[in-house]
Image (cartoon, rainbow, N blue to C red; front, side):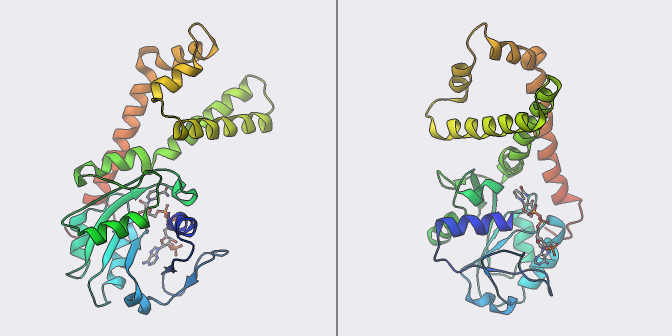
Length: 256
Ligand SMILES: NC(=O)c1ccc[n+]([C@@H]2O[C@H](COP(=O)([O-])OP(=O)(O)OC[C@H]3O[C@@H](n4cnc5c(N)ncnc54)[C@H](OP(=O)(O)O)[C@@H]3O)[C@@H](O)[C@H]2O)c1
């Protein structure tokens, strides 16, 4: 996620200075364009973006906490609450709990954020750090696990569906590489339509599915007994529940 954010910043703000703090002893990922700074130079920064797994957050925040001065911390770690972040940070730091997806690397996808008593300047900086089309959607923290289940994890759901479509194509006798090309291009084309078109999802679907046609026949199977809707609802619930678990009982050892 960190690499995707950096790629998004590079696209949106080519002149911005970005430094990556990795674990002690390890440099930035190979091939990255950005410079590696020692953590001691953190005092130069306007904001810190935390993009580690929740299980590593306590260690990372403990390292960051040794630096003086009030700062803006933007965390994209799924499941870490504002209370946990605020407890783990030195007093005076302003914390934002945010969520986005890997598509941010391409200037695509969505971004949400939640914070308490954040000033306008911090809010604007946070919005620059999450360069999603349409801007950052500010939500209540209580909505964050559900928002994460939809759009933090969401790309994987679409990829999983595409995988199953590819398997179906192969079962129907299509050559695997050709089927993969067709599915990938269809996924990309659908995303482009959804992004570019002012029509609702229902209208977009109706534009493909003429009554009595081939698409309608397929949708009838997907919608039989609400099979797809029930499955997706259960999947989103599981992701939302996992967010709460990561916060309360998981390996994250941050009080709050
Ligand atoms: N992947 C997604 O699609 C996605 C979407 C939205 C949000 N997120 C959130 O983004 C966070 C990272 O997920 P990820 O999938 O990008 O995980 P990841 O690939 O494992 O990346 C985490 C990075 O954090 C580094 N790290 C761990 N402990 C550190 C420390 N103490 N100091 C500095 N760096 C440290 C790791 O370094 P090492 O290589 O040395 O372990 C690794 O490079 C998670 O909290 C996740 O909830 C992910």
